[in-house]
Each structure stands twice: as C-alpha cells, then as structure tokens.
Image 1 (cartoon, helix red, strand yellow):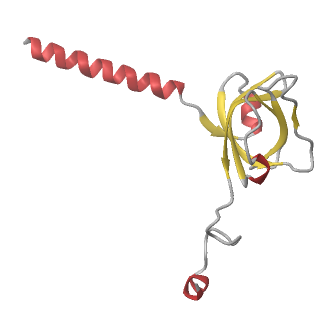
Image 2 (spheres, one colour):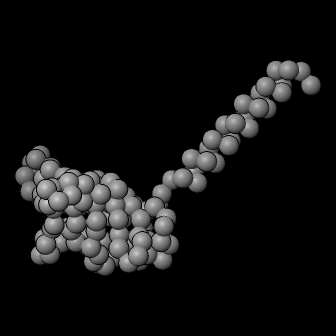
Image 3 (cartoon, rainbow, N blue to C red):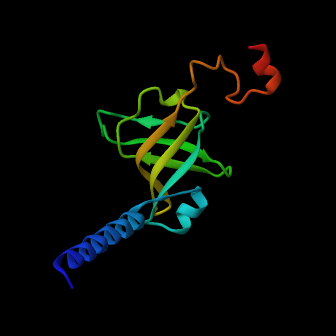
Length: 136
C-alpha cells in the first residue's frame, strides 16, 4: 500500500472514532420518570415552572444554588436544584429545558434554557389560523 492510502485510512478511523465518542456523550430529551429510571445519566427535561410552589435562592449562603419546582411535559412535578445563580427573568419563562441528572431522589441541573414570551406576537398563539393571518 502507498503511504497516502495508509494516511487516508488513519484519517477516516480517527473521524469515525470522534463521531462515535461525541454520540456517546450526547444527552437525550426525556421526562422526569425516565431520568429517575436512569440515575446518573444526563438528560434534557422539558417543562414549565410551577409558580405556586416556592423558589429558593439565598446568594449570601450559596450563590450557586437555586431550587424550584417544575412540571415536565407528562405532568410529573419535581423539585429541581440548579447549581448556578438564579437566571434573570426566570419567572417570565414560558418553557424551561433543564440539562442535568437525577440522583438520590433529586434532580440536579447544571444548565437551564428558557423560552421567554415573544414581544412580537402580542400575547397571541405562535401559530395563527389562515383566517387570523388574513386579518393581520
């Protein structure tokens, strides 16, 4: 074999190895039930903030711990511990995506993504009917 063929095979092998490694490390979307069935694995959990339950953030005691209650898309409620400061405008979020792991009966998030209401839809639904589109 020529040296160029050997080099090409090595490059392809490294590319396949990198792809497999990145796929193994990626987390998946789930609900709290699935996350608690597979404790220790990282998941993205989508849901909404429960405004009726207390949020706890005491920056004097621990600036990197914020806890709140969230209801996932299947209706299961869980107390969440976010290991970061309380995000700005957290209460205004329409939807929350937590990235974290379940452990010891608790969900610990290391990252939170928030979907805030759009200032462009005037409080209406994101999806308009053809009649509503014709009116606007």
